[in-house]
Length: 516
Image (cartoon, rainbow, N blue to C red; front, side, top):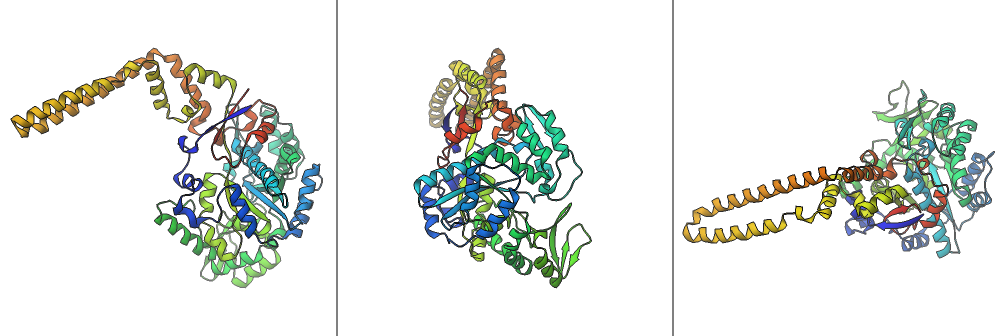
């Protein structure tokens, strides 16, 4: 496999706020602390508080969570290194999509690993540990219960509710038998694990364990205990709402639309089969859509005794992550980084270090069959990101340049300029009439050209179908390939190994991965 590049702003696939962020747009200067670059990490190292993380608790919990799993020497070493003051993490987070979900999950992990590898070369006096933070407390089951392999949609049906990481996986073990590809690691994980979080740790360890990637499940009483002071502040003062709202208003003034809207209390109540919002009504803390409610004293007592029953939402989850980990950088997709840009003021308020915000790597895999079609049609990789109709029109014009009526338009324009001058000399009131006739002629030429293009498309029906197939390959169902297709669809045995060799995490372009 080899790689070629396309500039992200040439793909039409990214928001303005994201493109402005990676281009160091001055309007966004106050929304983050460091640039997404090696230099940004170097600056972050110089500012990082070495005692910021709760290292001993973290290592103890990780050893407990990895108990019973065969791990590589590099994973074991990295877990132990987390006790050391000169060790830092680079983290990515993601939902527990079944069978890893879309391709970009793989790209996220590889980006994180390769950042650590490059930092280790640049700054040998430090150690860098890649971390996958599982969104095990998420309860949006519909977002993770399906995957697309070889054009088929495979759906996990279950009646379970609450935090998905706690779901049992018996049904998934059955579903695994219906999915094509090399899924032995998933079959084993889903059949032998107690819950979805354990299964995800198992198969991620199987796929990436040799790289030293460490998987963290933050749904743990001891980790939550380290976060109690911020949970308490959120319950009593709703500080996150105030600070995120202020930053959101700043972004609006700069011409951007905020990605998230904070709630008054950005916490859920977590129990078996339940993850429900906590809402303050008067002096009472109500658990939405349940019969549960607590007075101030009762909820603070609950926090003290059972911190694990409080789950941060998307606003506070990054704060929780940065409290628990000795984290230097966060690797996220465009939407994630867009909402992180709303959090800087909240982090400053809580006196927590803000990480380097690194975009994950982006990719389009082009197999040999698709490459043959590109070559036959004379298309560049960049063309695959164009609108389908525009792509067909471009191809038709490239095959028959006479279809374009640019010369005829220029001739008509020249003719009417002459008529316009004559009309002006004879009667200036005729100028509007001449202009109207000129506009009609140009519109007529547009219609003629459109009919010529349509006719030529019919004449080239095979090529039009081929272009449609290519576009569907790159954008299945109108969605960028990496956001829908599962990596099991790629038959290449050493796909992940090749990605680890090819992805440059600091080269912020679209990677076109070409099958040899």
